[in-house]
Length: 264
Image 1 (cartoon, rainbow, N blue to C red):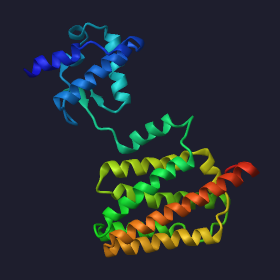
Image 2 (image 1 turned 90 degrees about the vertical axis):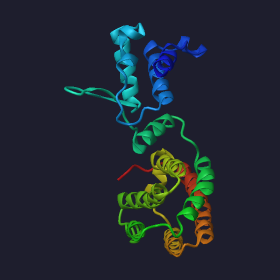
Image 3 (image 1 turned 30 degrees about the vertical axis):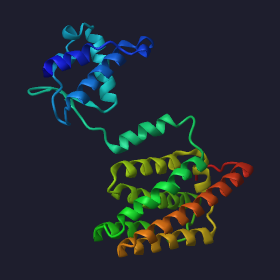
Image 4 (image 1 turned 90 degrees about the horizontal axis):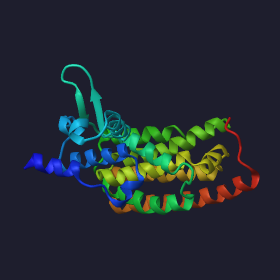
């Protein structure tokens, strides 16, 4: 029955849109569907029949290109020599985020769009983490704050410190017990890193009061996380995100008005 099911999947007629797509892309989708439907796991070998040009009725070139598509997507990897073949692989979170970043590269979401989600999601991450972080994780977050406690001495130093502030939030996202929630928040932070408008803002000197406010929020947040005060952690992050959004939008207007500075 399993072999019959696999054959049905691989021989299934393409969707209507398939006529507009290249044959290797269609074949790659069929192989992916077979992997998902039959429940192959990371490290499992892809059955030879699934990728045999003779069995599939396609040219060797088409089959090679289909496998290249799947390798590029991170779904399979090839091994040569004894015991070699095509195996199911796992896409890393960083690679997945990089691909999504590239998708938005030419038409990035606005600062308001990004913060609309951050204001909703990051408070929930810290509320769930309150009382759950290990001593090592708390030390890691505290050490991150130390990276931007001192006044920057140059535009390059300012830029590095602003990215370190984002790293604090990325660290929280990666500690999230909800993998999907953590991934989405990590992706939003990556968008802020890459966005040209934001890079220009990060090069500009940050007013001392904003620096102090941001650090103060994070120090109080760590205390709430350590104490297991979920509601306090949620409220602090919500306030912090609101203040950060207002600052970024105000600075975006100034940068646009004065011109974008060059990285130093």
